[in-house]
Image (cartoon, rainbow, N blue to C red; front, top):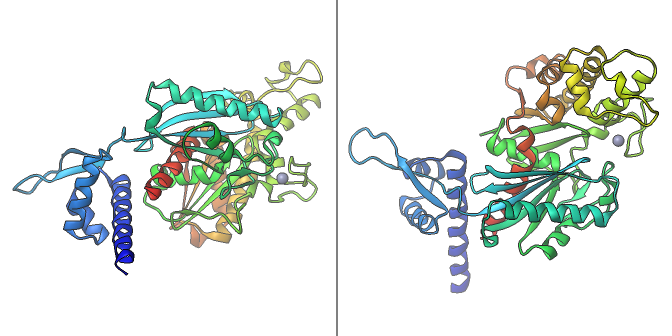
Length: 404
Ligand SMILES: [Zn+2]
């Protein structure tokens, strides 16, 4: 009986530590009185835990609050250099790697090419090399790193850390990436779907700060979404929720990399825009991109199309506009189904092209119930291209804190 009681006391204390650390992360710099007012913990409990966290250098004193007389209250904040994680974000063309500090900031970054057409061993080796390179970049001792988080295209099994069958990186099919990383590096690893991770990072540090429910739409080379309910990722049963890119949006649409026809991703993603640009130019449509198509194999990348749209190239602008309309309709469908507090639109297309975001927003608003407009927000991503690495690094940090 007494053993149980001791266990419970320890359990409660760890839980309170977790609550206080999170509260400081979400609201810091903050005073003990403010923590007490919002967490229902006693002053004694807060004092003990805060002293312990200060001794362990997980938090630090960050100046004084303004006082209405008497001693000025000390402000507490997370110690950004307490521990570090590695955040990796994979997509069909790049591996982004970052060192993420205890406050969720990316303090070092690297981007390397991912050879999406290569076989499993080559891609896994590329990921290992990216981890090695970023870990040594800042000259930090290896023991300061407490985990590796990977944001990857789905579908994937986040519980076992296995990537299942990503349509745009076929070489990663059935790869137990969590296990491979843990065998290679002396720290825990976790794998999570890219859009889920970006949704969480916007909730923690970006356009969804302070909210409980959020849907993130990733309009990039592919299209995906991440769903957050009550501040947690909604994985679906057993996982796989959020594959909005593979919702059919055109009855007789083009074939998608997933094998179906007319998916949102097949008609509106960055990959689809690039394919459409090639088709239109080969049909003789005028565009500043045309000189780049000399041989039958020539193609351009999405950056070239976006640059042409900025230069008022009619073809490029029309393709982006059409893509945004499709995504806007998909967003309206999501709103009508779920009515989240906020929808955050991110990914390459929205991040780099403000008109694209505005077009999605206006189409989505015009196609959902007017009564939803007042309360619900459609926001552009704030963390932009850093959302994936920051979310992946913070997610593994969360795991470290809850296991402590
Ligand atoms: Zn599809």
